[in-house]
Length: 207
Image (cartoon, rainbow, N blue to C red; front, side, top):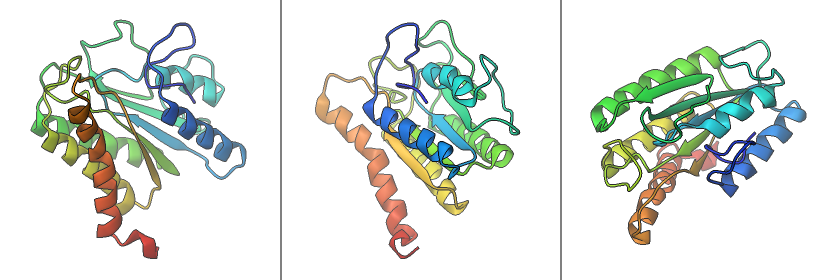
C-alpha cells in the first residue's frame, strides 16, 4: 500500500514500519482473494498523502481519486488539519480537512459522521486504523486541540464501531511529536489500552 501516511514515491518523508507490515498483509490477502475491499483510515494532524497516492496505484487505476466500489480494493479516508504539512495535498477516497484548534466535541462529531458514511458506502472486509496522536493540543507540530480524553474517546469509538459492525480492524500508532518520550509513549499507549478494553468488553476470546 504505502510506506507511511505521509511518504510519497517522489520524495522522503516520515517512515512507519508498522504501516509497511500491515500494507503487505493487506496486499497479500487481496492477492489471495481473502479480501475484496479494505478501508485505511488516517486520523492524525497531517494529511495521509502516502496513503492517498498509493491507493490508486494499489487499485490499478493510475492517478484517479474518489471511490470506485466496482474496481477498488483499497479505500482511503484522511481526517487532518487543513493548514498543516504538506502544503501540496494528495486526494484520498474520502478527505476531511479540519480547521486549526478543533477540540474534542466537534472533532468526535465529524469523526463519527465520516467514518459511518465511509463504512456504510464501502462495506469493507476489514479496516486499517492509523491512530495519530499529533492531534493532541500540546503536540509540537500539531494544530488541533484534542485532549487525552478526546484521543481515548476517538480510539474507543473507532475500534468499537468496527467490532459492532463485525468488521475486523487492525490499528497502528501514528504521528506524535513531543520531546518528552514518557508523555509521548503514554499517548501512543491509548490505542492499545482501548483495544484491550474492547477485547474484554465483548469477550472476543470466545468468538
